[in-house]
Amino acid sequence: MTDELRYTAARIPLASYYTALPPGTDAETLGKPGEPPYTRGPYGSMYRDVPWTVRPLAGFGTASDTNARLRMLLEEGATAVNTVFDYPTNRGYDSDDPVASADAGLGGVAVDSVDDVLELYEGIDLESVSVSLVLSHPVAAGVILAMYFAAAQERGIPLEALRGTLQNDFMMETVVLTAPQVLDPGFALRLAVDVVEYCTAAAPRWHPVSFAGYNYREAGADAVLEIALVVANAIATAQCMEARGHPFDSYARRLSGFLAAGNDLIEETAKFRAARRVYHRELSRRFRPLDPASTRLRFHVQTSGSTLTSRQPLNNIIRATVQALAAVLGGAQSLHVSAYDEAVGIPTPEAALTALRTQQILLKENGLAHSVDPLAGSYLIEHVTDELDARATAVLDEIEGQGGLVAAVESGWVHARLLDQAYNTTCMTDSGELPVVGVNCCVTSGEPPLEVFTPPHAAERQAHKLARLRARRDHRAVAAALDDLTACVKRGDSTMPALLAAAAARATVGECAQVFRTAHGHWHQPLS
Image (tube, one colour):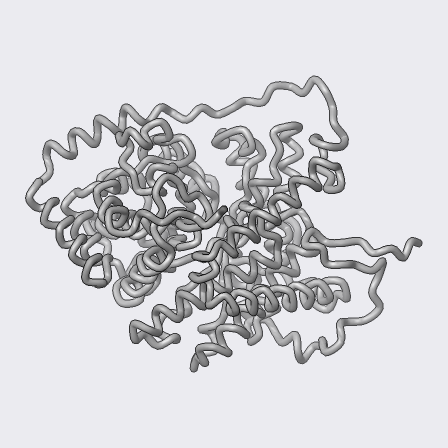
């Protein structure tokens, strides 16, 4: 047996075997599931009583196109839905804007007004189905949420009854997926916190922010940096809410995370456990909550899109299954399994259904729900959990030394860390040091062709819908609503009430977002 060290994906050294738990780790320090420090899970019984939420993702074409896919997934056993929006919607542009029209409906569903939202969720019971809005950029996140709320009210559903999540992460605005105009980091965070503040009072069952560790990971972060950035983002959000006079316990239980599940089964399982522990400790230390549940990190997991390959695509079924297994072993609250053909395009119905069935097999056939935190006490799992905890805490100290997360974004520190780690991963893949089956090892020739889903063309249909909307709406009401939104931005007031009024008046996504861009859309990433 060789004694040479091996390494996890985050370069944590591993011995050939372990004979004891890490120093200071025992049953007492690990705690019980549902109790601080939440290493073993946020709830005492976990999946024994309530299975994880089976939340597949869908979005392409127009609202009617995506509605059909969402309803198919629910009919096939999904217990909640994720709706992904196209790039123009994410960045706050109307589908007929020359800057964005070429991308309308391609990478997600095109949404321009509250009428699209009504069509998107037609026939879906929004009081019983939890809906995640995969809309991460604050330039448009609050806009889309306001349209969702306005649509619910028009259907006679009170906001208090709505369950779901908005990503709403200022780092997505300023670090990941940033073109063509970028809000400055401080204002982007302000918009994100406007949503948190509004939902705390008006939509108490809604998760107003989901710190997008998944996207940090896809942009290059390793497991250590993913944990640290999620926790740092939660700290920055809580500091803003504290500055507005809101006690930590009044909103903290509605904060949530969105994490990735990568290929390293042991490290990923340990990462989810370490993330809960670090989150609890760091937020408890800073904000001293009265309710222990206020520092209980709950999160959605998506299996890694960046690990999927266009070569030998059926291998992706195995990759996604192992990644989903890590999410379940690590105690995720909800899960999306990426489809095997996502490396080449929007999933076909067959691929989307296979991804859904993967979750159902894990839930129903493999006994994973019988015992909570089944790998607790494993010498290896606890070693990696402790290492991730220590390393993520050290990165948090670096961020604090920068003056906090907003300052670390403004200085380019976050961008540099992501770029460095992404570059290192690419080099390891290119050299073969990081094996990727079907790409740099185990390569075959003459692969059979893969069916590629072609999204229905959306740009022309959306342009016609926008023309009809603009012709029939009350132009004075729209202008007054946008003027009120502009005044809120200038005064520093919360933008959510004005956004809700603008949505109800049939202002478009692009019109609302342009108010934000005009005032604060001239920031440039410090990449030089």
